[in-house]
Image (tube, rainbow, N blue to C red):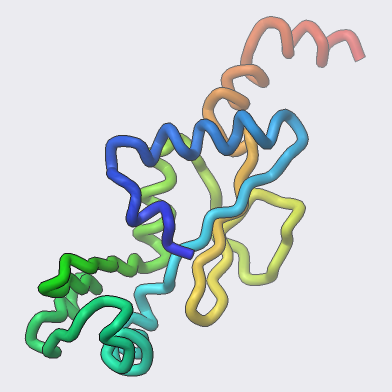
Amino acid sequence: NNTINIMPKEIRARVFQQMIAVAGTNGRCLVTYWNGQMFSHAIMNYYKPNPTLCGEFTLKEVDFENRKLMTKTNYSTEWMLPDQVQRVVKTYDISVDFQDDFQPNTDHIGVHEMGIFVWFSRASTTNSKKYYDSDDAQIFYSSI
């Protein structure tokens, strides 16, 4: 969970592209993020009681407004809000909407307690949309 956020920013879009390539035409991908709405809970109940994970820190060192923690040991975490996740994945050419109920067979973003789940496939990218608007696709659809 939240692995994309710990990768260098310059490779994140490529990671999404590679996931879609591996999934192929009919496959589906899943990326998860920690839900920023639960950040303060995580600080108090997970990070603070586990100094061996991230090092010791004071609450003054926590950026609660932006949901970021950076400790003296260089451990860092950033928790985004659901709408931020949607905007970020859109920059990676993934266009998905929110759905209230869990539907693993559709491209969507689902929010459940501490997690934000982004289900996507080739169909949620502009590469797919370009094909459906292409002359080849129009010839195919007009012939059926």
